[in-house]
Length: 518
Image (cartoon, rainbow, N blue to C red; front, side, top):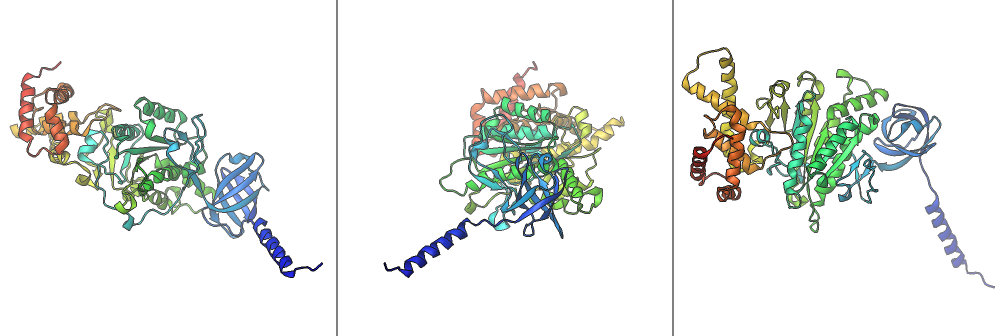
């Protein structure tokens, strides 16, 4: 029997190729020290910074992320139950970066920073993942911020306007209503759901009590906002590594929707609102991680790269160019101050990264001004570009009225005799402050806000008793929803008082003459 040499050679070649495919080569190390969510691993000579690793522990696999690259060892932050990891456990490198589940399946769910459901519901059922830590889009991929992100809060929408793609810091002491302002904004997005302007909201709770997060969940459910919201929870009982990655995970979940706008066949939401509550707790978790990893402490014991911690997160909030689908991520980072000290290390860092801040003052909160927004310190660096024309027309005089009021208020307290003009300014300012007061979780429609501001700036409230201002406003808005609805619709269509200002003045005079306080 004649043997075909070329046939034998092809069989051997095939066997060698298959052998090469089945041979698994992995970089392996051993845990030499573990504690407080940090593991020190000997080996892993080819590990890269930020790489995902798998630790084979007693109760199964636990994932971690390479944080420190040292001479003999590698410092790893462990995600999940780090108490299961023991000295001597094997650690394998994966060659991948940390990823979390993304997609519309997450809407209405409460998940941890790794995308594991915490609400007792069904598995997520999504196969798509997004990288937790990425480089933010460059300038060429962006466009200027010009679409309004309506909060439904009169003081914000009129004087500190926020645009889609902006980063607006919410800062203030503990218990001054920071979370309430952000929840109002989430609830206000209900009006856009199901339209091309729909906004997906992501609420990231960092280091909060579970009871607090449960309260937020109940509030959002009650107002029908969970339909378009994802809650990412790294509670107070979570480890420092979990609190550290929580904001990045929330941002990755939002980026799925933002970049989806690039797909011509996609018709879902492409605008995202991310609330990070709060980044001071993330900074504390990162400080804990860094000190355990023996990184040198600097000011207030924070590591030198704590600025980069927040800047690389907030830079991912952007308004994409039309070529990239025009999607956006708007960020509302929350920072807690101690005794109103906005000049502390972390507050000043985040102020310099963001495009403005909403400052909530404890004194105003105690005086019953809710929301307790200090319009002097609060600022938006996008400004009028993120407002409709009608709001711009009435908001300019509002700022001036309030500034004059604050200045004269000090004189009035001293019992100084005031002339008639000053008295008028004082009366106008007091009523504008009253107009800006608003109940919690009761967002106002933009057109209603414009009508209220217009009436206040034109002096229709000057002779209304201060305790009756809210009643006057309510009855006035009902009047424009009822008999004068065609005029209100005209304003909603034109989005400007130009050409219809006289009609509004006449309608307001008619209403004022017939109005009787109830």
